[in-house]
Image (cartoon, rainbow, N blue to C red; front, side, top):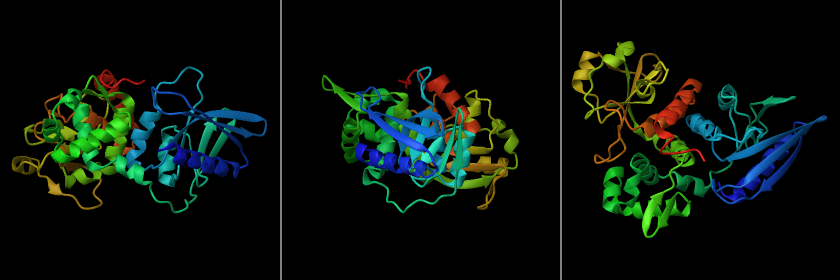
Length: 350
């Protein structure tokens, strides 16, 4: 979100909070990178108490992006730093419950809020927003080509210095789109050129930004089928050929060592192997089937991309993003476990 839109959002959120009988002061401090953002403090008062928050402005929030949002706001902070307040356009009642379950405080421009610190407690939901179009800049950030190219670079960071044709092949995009995507990444400070060589700014913010964009703009396009699996509990015994299908989401997290019992099975593959369908008696699921559910998702990367650190799973950044996209607290905790174990060294929190 650019500074102009962020300032407008903060002004409207502050005014909405004042409508609850609170006093609100907004202070902005502009600093140089490393995180490429300014700092915003909200000082909220009620009666004799005064409470300080570090505001994090988010333009768009959905169930699919709650996990990625919460993960990004959980960056390590200095001891004694104020809690982070998620500031956004609108939080629906179901999203409010999810955020409260994650203990993530928020306030939106419609007057919905969850504040719980010290002697202050406010919880308001159900207020409807004014109609507002999504900013063009926000839409462009999450184009399909950008998400695919960025995924290829996240899986193989050294690929960023390769010729465009190799990047296009790994990402599964048209050759002509690579230069546009890389120029956009450079403009956004995610890609640097040093001595004529491209270098990816690989940190946790980049990983979380991609996970957020993936949930928002690409993940919904990957779902190709839903099936009822009578032998759901025995999924670890299913015989899979990794050339045909790999585990993602919750089962992948389990295979990567997380203490998580899958509620949904996720497989990435072009189609379910006929032998697997017959052997496991898989049947097409109706629109309201929630138990013993298997989701088949299409791979969105090119065949030349090496995507699985573990033979039976997709790449760990995708496992991380799929877990965050559920919005479920246990899955978000598992995502953080995947990050700490497999991704923190490559994508450090700064």
